[in-house]
Image 1 (cartoon, rainbow, N blue to C red):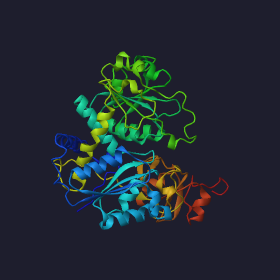
Image 2 (cartoon, rainbow, N blue to C red):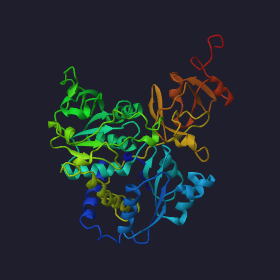
Image 3 (cartoon, helix red, strand yellow):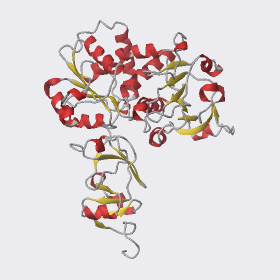
Image 4 (tube, rainbow, N blue to C red):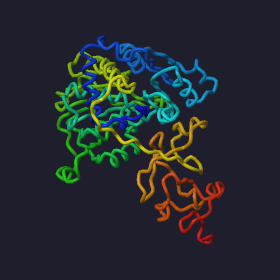
Length: 451
């Protein structure tokens, strides 16, 4: 039986997500009534970063399903401190120790790597600033419960949008459901280019300038961006010079500054977006629920904790039934009725050459052992590819064929004939030559005299 992992929110179809919501509702109605579903099963928590809600909610979920848990909440006290690789740790833990692994790791793409070496399901509980799919499922579930739908709703994402993996996964999922997103970042913490590019290419989301004046002070110091899956002919109806007008909002999703991932350690946060009674008084936010993945600092004032629109503590408690649903499905204890499945994304290994991933915190760079650089194609003409682990676009100037041992410029027509699994990427001609590749034609990195 094929092992199924949850590395990205994209690993689930929309039909499967909706069925998980219904299953979570069933569990939420009686948290103590399902202790026979995972009896005898064990979940292993491998947390290379601190966590409270994610780890405890997963462990609570498995215990409520009748299973057991193994916890490595501080990997400094494990063999990782002796230099053991993530791949080896996963092979050991999945080899009889547990029936499912819940992994949190500081390197982007760590969960993808773990899934390649695990014989049991791997659940991504956060990998660097990349993705956090189970938090996204929890957030979507909360919207579904509170609003009754996700399609077509208006959601504000505010705060640190650059380094928040929760925001990235959430934005992808909202786009797939056809929701509209208004980005209100703290200046300097806008959505990364690779996230915006993926939203445009894979989900048909077109970023537009937003007129967020109706949002009041929450957007006073932000260049707001409207991300909408609407078609271009619909966008043409909006001709106001200030951009698409935000009339009303269904949800405001606040995030804390992810200072542990900030290059300066979070020393420049003077203009950080904050939400209190004054900001929440804006007319457009009258019916908006306020969400936060927690933990919070002072970006949400305690004065609105009792506001009926503030659901962040409900949001955290609903993490248990949705994670009960995830665990019961991935362990095979519950079978989903839908036959709609997302085709498995095909990764190709970079055959030779240097690592073309530009992300210094990608697992392909932070853990050299047992990690072979991999990629997925974004387009063939022009050739564009993304890292198979962290999703950053690869950087290269030359492309080689491992069969012919020839190298070409990235815009050469010849590379369209090369099979995806025979492609190699090179930063320059010297690297290609060192790897044993010869020039293949015009645009192959040689000077005019050499050609």
